[in-house]
Amino acid sequence: MMPLDGRPILTAAAMRAAEEQIIATGTSVSALMERVGAAVAAQVRRLAGDQEVLILCGPGNNGGDGYVAARLLAAAGQRVRVAATGAPRSDAAIAARHAWGRDVEALGAAAPAPVLVDALFGTGLSRGLGTDVAGALARLAAAAALTIAVDLPSGAATDDGRLLSPVPDYDLTLALGALKPSHLLQPAAARSQRVIVLDIAVPVASEASVLARPRLSAPVVDAHKYSRGMVAVVAGAMPGASVLAATAAARGGAGYVLLLGGASDRVPHAIVRRRFDAAAIADKRIGALLVGPGLGRDERARERLEAALATDRPLVIDGDALRLLTPQKLAARKGPMILTPHAGEFDALFGADAGSKIDRARHAAAASGATIVFKGPDTVITAPDGGVVVALAASSWLSTAGTGDVLAGLVAARLAVNGSNAMPDPLAAAAEAVWLHGEAARRAGPAFIADDLARHLPEAIAACL
Ligand SMILES: NC(=O)C1=CN([C@@H]2O[C@H](COP(=O)(O)OP(=O)(O)OC[C@H]3O[C@@H](n4cnc5c(N)ncnc54)[C@H](O)[C@@H]3O)[C@@H](O)[C@H]2O)[C@@H](O)CC1
Ligand SMILES: Nc1ncnc2c1ncn2[C@@H]1O[C@H](COP(=O)(O)OP(=O)(O)O)[C@@H](O)[C@H]1O
Ligand SMILES: [K+]
Image 1 (cartoon, helix red, strand yellow):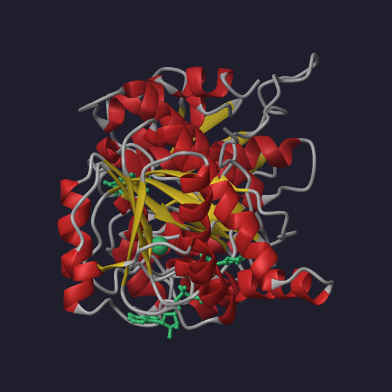
Image 2: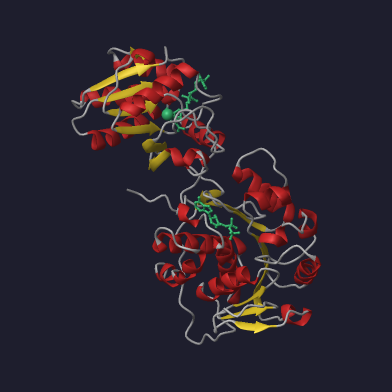
């Protein structure tokens, strides 16, 4: 099966536009629905074996896909029944219902089957399911051994990961033509164990794509510690956080890591410690200056942040530093910047506006001129030029103190390495860091602590060479 890495992510409107382009060049909606139904039927047949299949059909084209799949499954000898919310409304779905030609049960009265296919609503869902429909879906899903959603789990919005009504757990979602934001954004993404994208021969393109395994290379033959990429980490009130970040930077591929102004006796010997002063952070060899982990929010923290902003070095800003800034102030600064806020820091800096996590991160990048790594179980990375990368859910064991400090150090390392032989590409550097962080967490297994995570970074890097 094709991996999801690097695949484009389309909103409902963008998917509709792609579909309309195909229709404008002579493919009918019914022909497209036939293609979709065949692809869905093939997957269901592969998974269902000789078990009975119940397909739930809604009033729109998602339901139409369900009727086509039912007809093709029956023709292939599969035991299949159909239950519907009512009569289909779109022309193509009416034709598909007619071609099915067999019984259609009322949803509320339908008996369960071991395999449940949800073709109730897809990208056309405009509000939550009525309680009767949501109740029937929950009852039939709970009684099934295998649950499959066509395009999207019914009740999940397409573009922002919201659940508009209660959504049962699915074993599999068959995304039609392309991934939609809700296949990656929470809480909707967690409703499906797996997502497969079905190719329906509709050309799709998007500025947003799924985070892919990066391709990294070993240091060049004549590399030396400064040419590899130098990271300077500004310490503050909580020195442990800056040590975690500096350690991650060192294990994340940087050639030289400086810890500035930290008071801690548990610093790996490979990390060079210096006093914090304006000259130390203005060193032209610094490929990434990290400020924020454990910085604190006192007067000294403010001074250190101001000094960091006043340099022309590529900057990574995390944690406390994000609470001491405004988007305007960032926009006024020249030079590459990457911000790594979690949801609380993001809201404090950019406001707790409505909208999808992708749109909010995109606006934040445009407003600040910085690349944004909006962290969480559905990390979204956006660049000021509009590029968007969304990570698949990483290990939930990452939800432990200090893993954000590790990520910040890693982002700084990748930015420094990335900028050591070319103009730094903050989006690519941030994407490399988020991928390596997720991979290190996967390798660390359950119940790791942030200190363990950095030890798995070399293995994660090795997987990209
Ligand atoms: N994008 C593509 O290339 C293709 C998409 N197709 C399918 O078409 C779907 C989109 O079809 P539609 O736009 O017809 O939308 P849906 O089938 O998702 O549902 C829309 C219909 O349901 C009604 N509705 C919306 N929310 C409701 C609610 N909560 N309770 C009751 N009724 C509600 C709408 O008024 C409309 O009649 C896709 O998800 C996909 O399954 C395929 O048939 C063809 C190819
Ligand atoms: N449930 C989760 N699933 C996957 N990743 C998570 C989850 N919760 C947190 N993370 C990741 O763990 C890290 C936590 O960062 P942060 O909240 O800044 O923690 P801290 O400040 O303690 O270091 C981020 O990279 C975030 O994306
Ligand atoms: K569906």
